[in-house]
Length: 405
Image 1 (tube, rainbow, N blue to C red):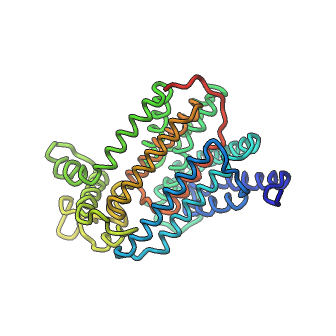
Image 2 (tube, rainbow, N blue to C red):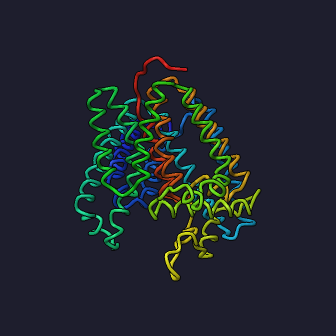
Image 3 (spheres, one colour):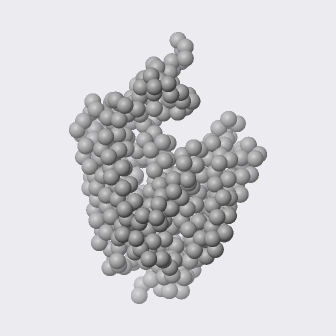
């Protein structure tokens, strides 16, 4: 037995990892860019020679190979891409593999160690709730004393971290529900209240959709999982055609649907990005090339307010992961993304524990809104958030009612 596998040393390292996870409660609302550090340090602390011979072993191997192929394609796309973002593609997928290693190490922990990390995760969520409520009531009194930022952007900065709470809310609610139904309900209501208090629509939609997905899993089991597979796969395949031909500003206005300026702007960004996608098929423009298009300073003319101002057609990224993959990695990238989604649903379908199956689908429901409405898919803090949340939900162990096929 080597040093990293020594049980007494592992016990100490688990306490250190628990402490780092508790720090997540402060980092998410106040310094979301630090989530990369939280993920990396957690892996370094907890790392041991994991046993790949597990019930999930072959599935994790397949996902790892799939991400390696996706990395190879992303790296290769820099050859014709305008950004030449070779190093960023290495860093981005390096972060993904750090997340995979972290989840593997948590998955292979003994029950008592998982429970310790679960309690740390719950404490972290409670800290987030308290900070979110304080900041929303005081208009950012804590963060304004930590960083130099304009008053109008304070709550937006804090709200970005609420996506982590929105993703973790339903899994922990389910855990509490198995212990005490009222406790589960109270926890969800408190989390929902803190999320509602902040200006982040994607987090609110995510926490509600996560709970809804979990509820439908309890009702329909794998039938619901397969339904989501069909619906999401259809959107993944046709997203650029939908946003360039159907879901456009002109069509919305012609049907007397009036959206707020930010929401209409988002529709315009998707329309512009989708039209650009069709121009660069089948290979795509190249990894992280959305920044290049954004640098053209094209405007959404349908939203021009006067001679001097119209909103940007593409500020940094398309604010939709599916359209961004279509635009940057083309048909090959979207095919690999489809295979990834199909295999994730396949893994969830194979889960025998109904509570864990519900947690798995809740993650999809909670991650989808920020992924499709807000953030760039290659943003390091956002990838770290996803990997942390997925890994931490693996600490939840429960008994189960009879599975539904």
